[in-house]
Length: 245
Image (cartoon, rainbow, N blue to C red; front, side, top):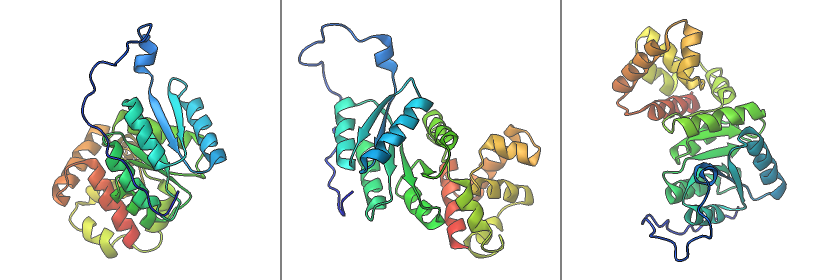
């Protein structure tokens, strides 16, 4: 992608009836088929992700775009996109992500990158990414992240390996993460640390040997203590703390 991206404003007005009706009414399948967009400037990489996504979600229509501008044009043309995968490894990757998120909102955008650095993940999350997939991840990780984002836009799947790396750099009671954790009870700290590693509620429950409902109670308590409104903001705090230690 280029050093700067100029994105057209998305038309949020509902369109009226089409100027000319189609010869035949669309089938039920065409009305319900998800449209997923893969954005990458490299044709081979883009095609590879599109093929993988198509195999994982055969019910979906996979659309390829070479740039953020093209993705926005597709969003305006189709009007019913379900998700966008965006390569963020260019020099202007984070700014491109921010502009694309604003242009296609509320369509979720997942960042795709080769970087495992928590600081880069923080930047992408802050720019509005609803998830972060490492290019080196196996296909089941891509499937997991895409499925979670499509099922629950409030969930923020992050690469566990990057968070694990950051927690190994310094003790958990130092830096920004320690400041956050000092506000929490011992069990809430356990939950928060697993959130930082990218665990879902179900995985946290399994790891701690408690019910998933109990984990939800702890997550709500953590949200209240940290002054955030949703689980995504908890994850943002967790990943920011991870990048600071």
